[in-house]
Image (cartoon, rainbow over all chains, first blue to last red):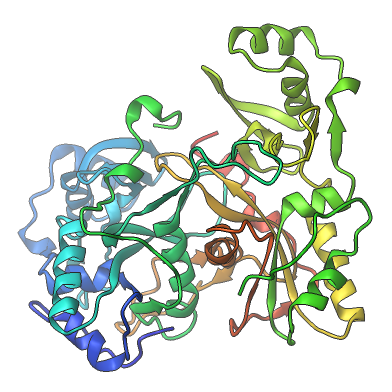
Length: 239
Length: 239
């Protein structure tokens, strides 16, 4: 279900209470929140006028007709560059997400000279939001989402970048199919599947930033984070 | 919604009519069908006893304690090998999908000596199934799904491997956000998002192979295929 009617989010907005006012949440709902509005509420906007681009950023930006200050912000948000080919810059963020331009968003900040960066700690943002929902009387899981591209396939999809209350992975390890074979699929990333499901109602026309999944059975886990989803470099064949 | 109560699928089963008998479908539904049962209905099982493994398959299988006949089947299903590191074999299938073991499934065929390969032409399978639903009086989109891993993130997710009636991509190209900026996200792969949503009800406990998404607005497109989702090698940075 989309959560309609949210106003433009500004710094220090209480997203949980704004959502609770507009959606009749029930215990067990999964609330999917687009990271962009979390960034806005947390003041993750950066004024490009304050940015002094490095020589590396200036050189590369001039070669590909980009704003060197924007490139500098992307570099500052990155732990390392995964691919820099033509005008494309795919980096690993400080959180460990691999995505284009470190998730820096130029289009939605409300001003040409301002860009939005990802929340500093999306798991912590999710926990705070879930706790706030708890204060408002409803026990929900919170998933903070962003829209990422992926190798090999065109079209982006929404994925999870922060979770609270719900384990992002669902494991079949040790279980067997009706024929007695152990499942070939060991673990599903249900956080990403929930994020994808939410995009179907968030994105299509009105760009609604919050969606609710009801009726999905999840096991409450107050310790969960995105950490188990971030594949270790030693297990990764594409970094 | 999961479609419950389907029996074990065998060769020449009419999946559309078996689904229609068990789900009250309405026009506009999206029916998500796990490729495994499509493979079973289409007779895509291969008896390993019939396979004569190549020298390459025998060498590599012995090094990683694999069945050389299974490795041979994976190679035959592959157009090229994308990564062969340790025991992991990630290939590009003849359809153009990049996935582990070319999508060959050893666990679900009902016999240790038999493996299932992906449908030969999943788009054509989807079209036939959609047409059959049409004969049964309901105008639905069909998405054939499989469970793939991905780089950088642990946990698999369901993705689309065949479509009928629905364009797998939803484009924002040329549209602008409320601030007048052109959308940074150009295209969403809604077929993959629908597949992911379906997995949430298919996979969790009972391994239901078919799910239905109702209420998602899609534009009927009888010409659609997965082709626009398959990124051209020239645009791919990870192949």
